[in-house]
Length: 275
Image (cartoon, rainbow, N blue to C red; front, top):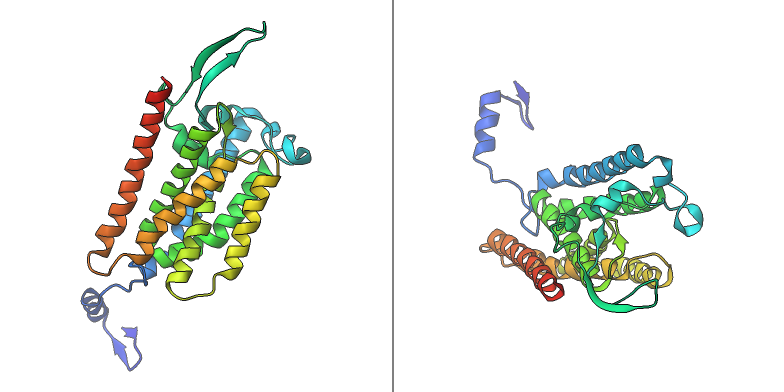
């Protein structure tokens, strides 16, 4: 027997009653019970940490320390060389002998499009990883509880891919890694979700402004990656927050699907223009 508010109930009665009850949903249509556990946030953090460990095993402790920011960032490692995002470039190439020639550089067009995804799970050193994972832990659990696991995961990936696209379009042939684009997208999304339910988002707005200022003032930070993720997250959050209740899930997932297709199409058009 299972204790109830009044008396006891048999297990069969409890299961039958559960089948007849509607699952609790959030204001945005997410599964309230599943999102409360934060499983997706924890899983994303685990993947990022695992990738750092793999990079450490492949390249040694130099992948953790010894790089920029006074040696607090990691140096280059073979895993980041393989999976980091690299922008495209077309124009004049300057050679050691002083000559120039028109050329193009685009590893994505050569079949390495996986970098769009892998780059958002790689980091330049232990400090880079720690800062991003702390932000993901703080913000990710809140959004996952509000949206539910699937919507949150889709938002995170679309924002990360949007940051990768911005790197591809505007960075040139420089290696870029980190989950910062996706996390900036979560910042923007949380601001919109809070405004939708009438909550005060002023402190979050201050945090976003501070991070944008740091993006422009600290060397070595990917400006396109951060701003691209921020913009993509904001756009993705609009249908998640404001979709009407009727056919809400269809509209939300459809909008995110359209954004994913748009990212793919823009990347293809860029590759075609370069090659």
